[in-house]
Image (spheres, rainbow, N blue to C red):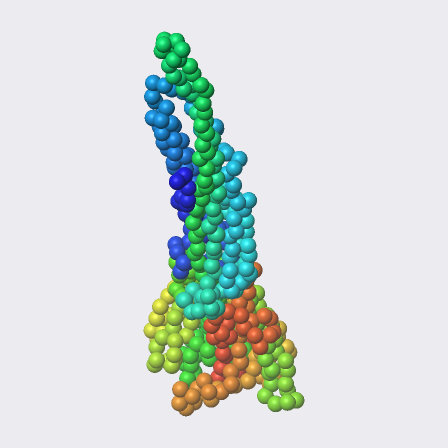
Length: 464
């Protein structure tokens, strides 16, 4: 039988890169939410050329075999002027017009986001397409599943049809002795024979399939205290923790990253582009004093030094404090905190924090989300949030069982964080009903008011 059948044309290979050109390490690796992924497909053209060469070799072997048969058949002395013609003389599958490639090959990306389809050139070695349908994250960076399934990339395999047709023709003279000339002369009669070798090969190129994850970027909101107010909390009569504030005390806010926020494979944190915090509460201790209190604070990225405050002799739970370099803080406040052994751990890192403002002898420091405006005069007129009758009111019983200290309904500080690629997490300004991202408690922090800042008789302008 004439040769033919399938021939291995190699396999396609899919590689996926993030927007920075990093090659994803495998199916458990991935890109950030809404980050474009570049999908590179390699088709082993050398393997396809080798398949063509293998086909041409088999066709030539069949031709030579037929030629050998004819040469043996017409090898007798009676045959003269034997000539074998092969048309075409050489079969080249690669360039032969009978060889049919597919016009294009399909590659698809399917997943929780936007499904897309692309055309691949079957004759091209390496080609790339950008997939921008990563709109739905599949996991958090700590591998919590958010959406069923994965983003699956599939490049369809394809076949190259290689039919062939070779005509073989032999001509000869068959000669016999002429009886009339007593055998001294020959009588020759022309003859010929034809045969066709035809068939079809199929170069089979195997497709490829892989998958990747899309990770949701997240960050964490953190409440902090000023050095002055840590010193006050450490000597007051209340049971204090980091979420306990006086009405009128500066509520400092940072957006920070924890280890769990790193990309689980690359180890990089997501990129924050903007961050803000806001409060929207009803102030006042009875109906004729009710006032709507709201404020938004845009945060800035910078390096900040903070302290974790721990000492159960003075406070009941850890607190966080921003360190300031002003002479007032360093000479008047920090020695007190050090003497009480309150400074447990110090950390300097890049965060998103309130803009710097200057407050009298307190010097340069962060603005608070409760820094709004003052009303009236005297120590009872702090910020709107700290105004005695119309500001934030006590929300926690200052005495009794500490475990029940949080049982009262608190106020809240809400965080809104925007990440690279147009991804927003947290709470949109003044909308308490919907949170984007994980976890809710990272973007919505309670504030328990233990009293009013006006209780400190020396309290004047250092509320920030």
